[in-house]
Image 1 (cartoon, rainbow, N blue to C red):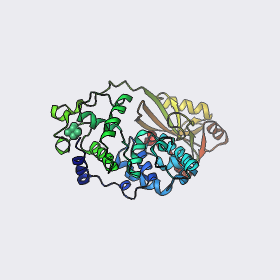
Image 2: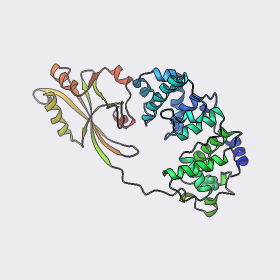
Image 3: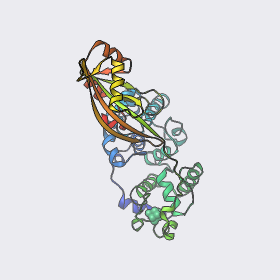
Image 4: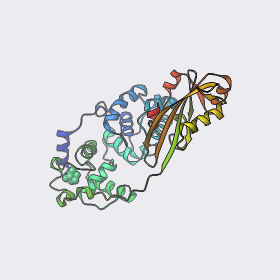
Length: 349
Ligand code: SF4
């Protein structure tokens, strides 16, 4: 790889991004955590808000999980926010609130893996440590026509070794950022813009005309589908919510009542009548109303949710309230707005 030509290309073409100015080890950590699996355009909005609310590891370590998840709400992959909190607590406990510059210590911090260690070490501390992610794997597999599967551990090791040989002692951060920019803007997964690439005269896949054959695609497994009926229940002015368990999918976030399967309006009406001991409005003992909210779906990395939603409005009566409290918490509109819900439920929020 012609590293000097690559760096010259980067200095002429680099993206201007807020986390690239006034960089600190902490801000690098936050921005890189946000950028994992998330588009730059989305992070542009969250990054300044998160940093102004939690300006250093101490502020993050002492915040409540609900507060952090609320600021993270909509970014997805919430385990990243929880890992940042764990990592911040560890940094406060072991390093007096400052990220250590030694890569061997960085990688021991909860939530900081090899990619993040490379990114923080090179960008914030100027150390020649590679930061290998899917983009870098794609670029190297194409450059050398490596028939490797991107998600395999052996592939990561191979590319880490190659990037480790290429990364210069001078400007290691620029080298890693150059790879990030090339992967994001030129050597994209589909239709790479090879005519704009600084490697077009040495890239093996391009010379073979087989750019999209590298890395090798793994056969995709069918993603399981779950059916959910989402019930947004109002008791007078209050809204019924519940917190998801501490572990597992979307842990610690709030949700509405979620019944397994796709229930029709009639079935929801029966469920509500049985539970709240009331009848749907329009009957003699008219008490509650149901409003269909329509269908929505959400695709997680390993799972698809198909959802159908209903709003149920109940009067604020004692028995109905008791039944509602057996399912979750009744909160005011103001409290509801302060809670973090997953993006999966955006259609019903
Ligand atoms: S020439 Fe094309 S395939 Fe090769 S590294 Fe550049 S953009 Fe990627």
